[in-house]
Each structure stands twice: as C-alpha cells, then as structure tokens.
Image 1 (spheres, rainbow, N blue to C red):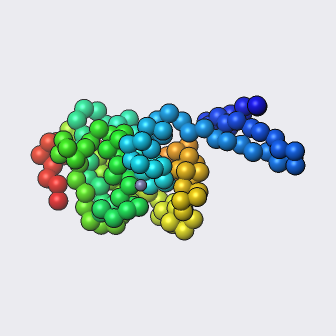
Image 2: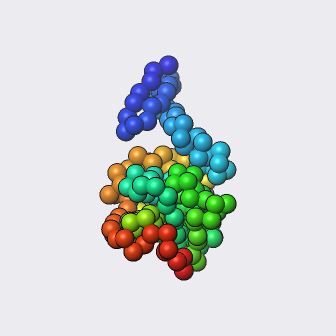
Image 3: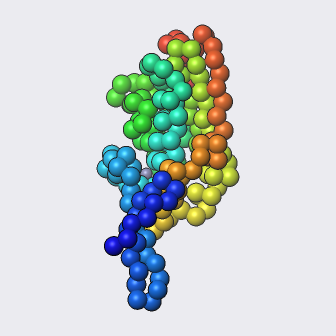
Length: 168
Ligand SMILES: [Zn+2]
C-alpha cells in the first residue's frame, strides 16, 4: 500500500486493476476529536473551528465570543466548532448566540475585538453543494484552505472593550 502526502493531508493509495487510483484520505487527529465532540464532520463545524483557532492565536488571556449564526442547523454547527477551539463555552457563560442567520463571530479580549466573517461566496459554495455524501470531503478542504480565502477578518484595538462589554 502506497502512502501519499498532499496539501497537509496523508492518505493511502490503492490501485485497482482497472488502473483507477483510489485515495483514502486520513482525517487529522484534531478533526477526529472535533467529529467526536460534534457528532459529525461537516463544513460549518470546521468553519467554527477555524474561527476559534484564529481568535485564540490573535487574542491573549480570557476571551468572550458573540456568534451571529442563530441556533438553526447547519449554520449553527459553527457554534460547536468555536466552543471546541476557542475555549469559549456556553457552560462558562463566555459565549452568546445572536439570531442573525449570519456566518460571523466576534471575539473580545481585554483590549481587542476581532470580527471574523465567513466570505459570502464560501457560504454559498457550502450551501449549494454540501450534502451527507460529500460533507467530510468539504470539511477537510475547508480545514486546509488559507484564512484569507475563507474569512474577512477585522481587528479593532481598544481599551474600551474589556470585561465590561455588554452582550446584546
Ligand atoms: Zn453539524
């Protein structure tokens, strides 16, 4: 059995007699854990995972998340991805969800606010092509796409946000 690596993924290649190459892509460990946490691996939970990871990288200390997806699946799967990677959780009360049907999240630390919005064309691409058969493949693709291809990220530095930020 041959192994290949491409785009950050590894996989096993088998060649059938017909000459067709079959590539079984292996899911990275962090996505396996995300799948176990969320119940399935789809594009929006990975989008949330990426958002939370960006926030963790850019902000220091305690952070608070405000998510604008609403609570309707599949868009709300973003919430679980964010909980998984940002350490903002409903149980701790440092996350809130707004009913806006918007693939956007704000992360607030003592002196920074980061707005992360999924690009409209990416959301359209997901919603027009995703189904149960291809969701893991789409999820893997979104996991490795560059930040700038997926999101519009706005960072605002201020001392006004702090822990006094009032969630709407
Ligand atoms: Zn989901």
